Length: 357
Image 1 (cartoon, rainbow, N blue to C red):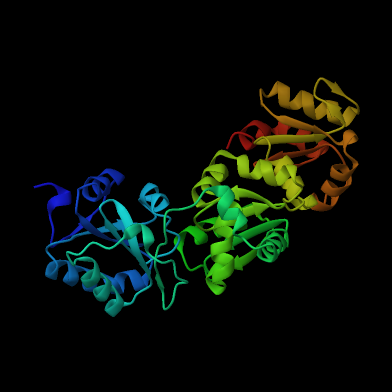
Image 2 (cartoon, rainbow, N blue to C red; image 1 turned 45 degrees about the vertical axis):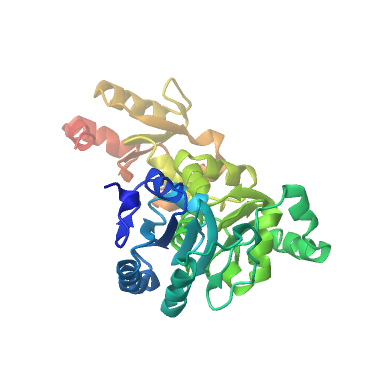
């Protein structure tokens, strides 16, 4: 017996194929619970969903972990959990968002009746008490945008452009109300980017309007300077491959590096780092020449920085290290000393061992 044929029990859809095989059967009714491991309302609905499945052998019941099975979530436009959907003859005929056990039982009873409903004429309603009913087949993009009132488009445009980086999400950055929103917030915080946000759960008009405005059916949605960058999966991918940081850098949205941070980064460019006048091949002071020769004679590989080419580093490092002169030699981020100390360490045989610990 296949997964799709096992009515009366709740099955985990571990791939899109599991669910596709069930919904494509003629006359089939499939009820799906989209859930997440971190969502307490989802967990609370589990025993209810299981009991209803046991009592309803003429329907098929599936669970989908919304974040792990992102391809299924995208197909069914899941942007919050818990979400329950009813699929009949391959068509989504009903949805219910939220933990409402009586409503769940009532809807299951409604759709298991033998009399088919005109699925393509189901009236679209504004969600009430966590329940949302899907509407007729989606019209063309042009028709949909035409139906978005000019006043509403103006308001959405203002919201999108209210901050250079704007996130439309479930909840707030401090208290995200879905895992997808939480992940994008974490990425933005890690990037150190200042961003605004709008809780689409607080305004159903904005929630529905943004889907049309952006031609993007799910949330969160991230905008940069008024342009949609993408949803959760795209943002996570861009963050992983470095594209997101590049976008923020090109727009001048990354926080400016402090002098202290810059100095730390330069000091740690190499395990052994010499701040000198000139370069190892062309030193421009005798003290720098002596330290370069000492390192070369000991066979020590080292990086270098010409402080004559960067006055900010030249002056800043004096304060950072509390050492007023150059050259300065660092090992693993720590100051070893200037010319006199380095020459003394070489003479005593300490230099090589100190730089190879």
